[in-house]
Length: 344
Image 1: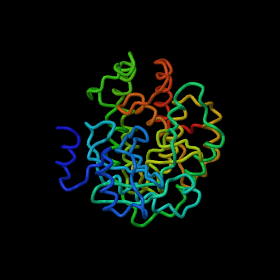
Image 2: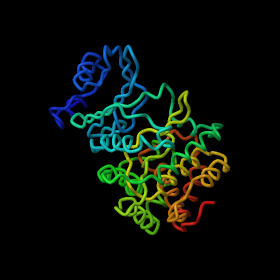
Image 3: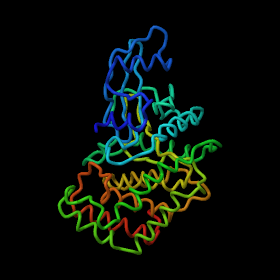
Image 4: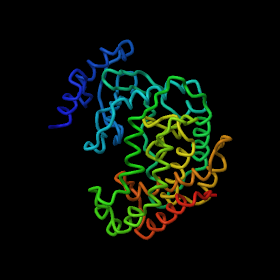
């Protein structure tokens, strides 16, 4: 069964978004998403989608982005995922449109079609995400450091919309791949296919019952309904876009109300894996505006967990690290998880 058949079997009455100008033009007209005298000219992929299928629609007047959530992860079709995630993304953007600091970094929401799991957003322009940071000699610029910390600080301080969804289905999916799957001794994912020797290097962490208990406890915090801050939920270089107008933040489908330490922990973990100069992470930590209830010990645990899960889990990154460096990172990550020491 191909992906279109699989989608239609799951949602028989839904429109399947694909690179078909005639079909998409008919769909857009039906949704009344065209301006007066607007005509769809072409469609193109704006980049590799991770969670969702994405197209850039180019008309005689403008361009905009169409995103469809399907009942699987676009990059890993073998992994099921809730289609409701696109609703979370739509509500995230809509809820924050009046927050100037955040809106500066985010695309505007042009339309949302719940029945077909499709979101239309502003086209921020051609660019690339910040995955280039994982390659040697690429350093995060000072303007981007300021932008990331301003965005995250403002996001974690906004009044939480009363109707913001719990996003538990997406959290459950993320929880599995952050807090559980990487630590299974036999999970069917051979790390030696990623890098020779990585499977053996991962085994001490897969077999450490005390470490896994600490990780499980953090996972319970991640899934808790006791959160006090609105989170992006996936705040790493793949969710940051570099375009002509500067830094933009996209893809908040993992957004939820939770611990601020999680978002900042993910950010810092990726800077460490990208071998950014220590001054970069220190600068972000210093500039980030902590709330009164911020827990630096929990932050260090989330940093360590994100490092471990990216190095030994299925969600691999385009890292340029040798095995020895990965081992050093894993050792340090485990210490942060076990000892809950402040990072700085």
